[in-house]
Amino acid sequence: MLTRIRNAIVAKHSRVDVPASRMKSDIARILKEEGYINNFVSKGEGAQKVIRIFLRYDAKGASSITYIQRVSRPGRRVYKGALEMPRVLGGYGVSIVSTSKGLMSGKNARRENIGGEVLAEIY
Image (cartoon, rainbow, N blue to C red):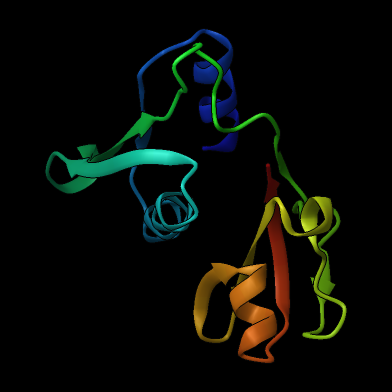
């Protein structure tokens, strides 16, 4: 999903479709809450369900996402406690964390004092 978003931004697309899953829907929700995308909608039925993500650009055509990278990979999982949760770019960026209470931003995880697996960093 992150690679599709990154490639769509480089190609200056206004939207991108990704195969749907609950985790991808939660990631899109966090990106919308943090202001990195305009909106997202789920389309289709059953196995063909997709999430359409509408990317955000400013008046000059620059994307609101300049960097989007996966942190925790299947070969190397990255877990952080609540006190050591990373601050991306000193608080200007956002990290997406999988916690026992679901997916949330690193800022919300620190606020609720829960740690978890750091999935991605975006700024």
